[in-house]
Structure formats: C-alpha cells, structure tokens
Image (cartoon, rainbow, N blue to C red; front, side, top):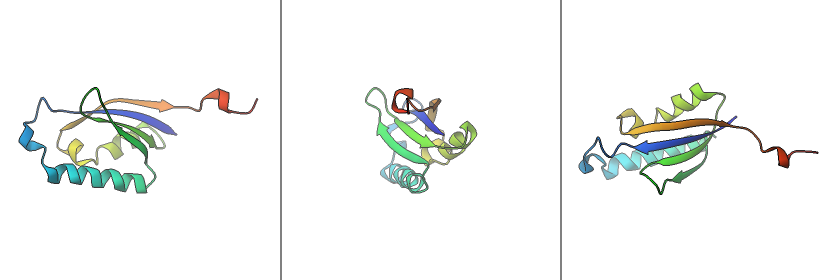
Length: 96
C-alpha cells in the first residue's frame, strides 16, 4: 500500500544551532537508505512550512510510523508527523 506522509520540522522548539549540517546530512542519508529499501517512493520539501511530504510504500500505518521514527530528526523529537494518509489507486486509470 502507498501512504502520503506530511511532516513538520519543529523549528519553534529547537534553536537554529541545533540544526547542524551533520544532523541534516544524517537525515538525508537515512532517507536515501529508506529509498533504496523501497520504502520511500518520492519525497518533496514543503514550501508552506519546514518539513517534507513523503510518498511511501508499506504494509500498514504501523510500518509507516516505525520507518519514519528511524529518521534522525524524528529520533531527536525535531520532526513531527502531521498526517499519514493511506492512498488507493485512482479508479479512472483502471480497466473499464
């Protein structure tokens, strides 16, 4: 199943110096690992707020939350999952 995950960086709760280049590089590396594993299908940065929107492949929402919790920012409480939405195929693209 595919899921749409909206995240938000908790910029209000952490000072600017907490967002180190090393931490952000570790975050990017973990996203690359999750992409290589087939979990992350696509990811976009949000323009309306600091954070990302992830299209993910998982068996269920528990797996989504478990994989997202492995991100370094999430492990430090610096990233929150705003929404997790299970997606289904658009019916107009299926056979008639």
